[in-house]
Length: 444
Ligand SMILES: Cc1ncc(COP(=O)(O)O)c(C=O)c1O
Image (cartoon, rainbow, N blue to C red; front, side, top):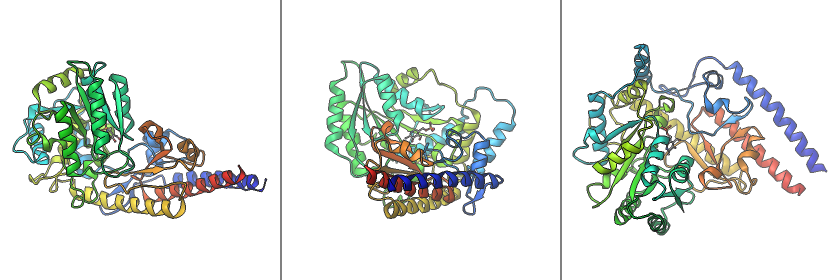
């Protein structure tokens, strides 16, 4: 009875706090919040006003630490290029310019460490979810698609909707289980009818754990695919957000095309995560194998057009590139690089703050097995909190993406790509939710 009364009091306190938080954010409606000399963050009020999905899906009182969209304003060169493209006033079908294609092909070649990439290998697409569906369509109902789990939900959706899905565990951010990968590829090949394709949908760096797969792990993945005739599709959208490239160097799947005989690979990427331009609907698939590229183009005919503003954003990211080797869309001399460095520094601060807080205030109910090496995502084991921890937390004023869609019930994914004050508020609510769970357990 005492526990129930306590819980009731706590929920009342939550409710009044929730009201005061939404009031506070309304008061701070104007102007972006400065995070560092180049980095600015939109206020919650501005995000809601502009129809951000992240900020308008739930009632105002819920702190939204879910969908992989950050709250930072894009770097000034990207904003200027997008504004110029929009100001032109004509918004018809657009083609990438020759110069953009050449710059992109050159940047891809350097990120793979190869002499040249043919611009004809590039396919611009209006987003990566469609690209994942196209990749799964290469396998189709007669083929099979292997996917790591947990993984960004559209991998699993695309594999299940277009083909047969075989998953294998990649755990909570630790080393690759080579045996599990090999067994899944064998099972997928077995499930493929003669003449059809088997595909591996790979995620590097990995969403949700933020692991940057090591060069030897990537070599294993490439060789395992080549040995079985499996098409390696590597989604590398998070490669621009690696915290310590000296400790965890990024090696693209494309790097193995010249050294692993028989490898057929498709490399997918986009500026969406690094530069916060997901709404500009632009992504890139690079497909060196002629026959595979033709089939990929054919299965993807339903989404052929890319907006001019999206291409303008890519142009701004590549501008100033002096040709140094780097992950694609993160040129070290590029006009956006000073901003990207400040972003990474701010995100590293958020990451470390969240990790320390969760360990200190929320354990053992919440735990993180490994700090993310890339991304603004934190993969949290919350099985001890509740059966559906995302729902439990949402009722207590903070929303994290439920793990079940990633193929991992009992986990939640926290997005720390936000202003530190938003993160702190979300973390405080995690702590309160853990307190509630303890009271409920005490009552049971
Ligand atoms: C691994 C991965 N691939 C693809 C996407 C979708 O990217 P885009 O919005 O550029 O289509 C996301 C978004 O979170 C992602 O994490």
